[in-house]
Image (cartoon, rainbow, N blue to C red; front, side, top):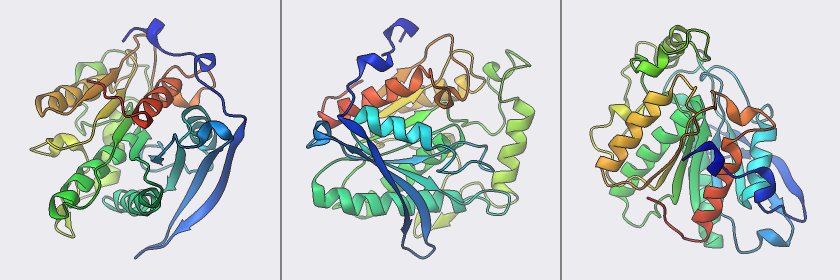
Length: 288
């Protein structure tokens, strides 16, 4: 996809009033806090589903409140409810704590979406995109043990770091680019500590990165968004190739002039693209 193919803010519909939001506490073995954005207005009726979102921050920083502008815009532009998860942060809570929190939120959203007969997707940006990809894997494996469990409609991943070694050439292309590979490798070590990178819980392997998984078959249709200037671009392109080899539909948004953390900017190129893809999921259209 070329930069000129990306939608502009004015290309996407606006609802008649701004999204409503509320902070919620999701019950479970460990209660999880989250912020729920609900698009208002008649444009939402019968259209949107539930998107469970994990924020960025190198797994050590960030919150649903700090990411409020991003998740509010996603709700406004897509017509989906967006559940932004306040997952536990490293180093106080190492893998798989954050992933378990996202999975708790995903189960909660699924129970509500099922009553409304609307789709559920998972997504995130940067470190949150990594968590979302790992959650989609764990959810797929759970569904393997429970065939009645509804599959996810999509995973939407904005520039997720996926290679703990940062071995791709894109990590070395610009020494001044963010995130620097040394900092990113350090963040991976803080997240994973000395425990196995893929512990087992409840009969499921909880991967810290989907690149560790030997089999990607059965994952939901995937939207991958990463700019050409982003150091993690090769991580994302590698994942796209592996997904396609596993017969998973992939929609790759890869504009050449976009850097990391694009969703945090008011003039983001990638955020309206993701919102547009959510609208495509809503109408049942498939992308390959």
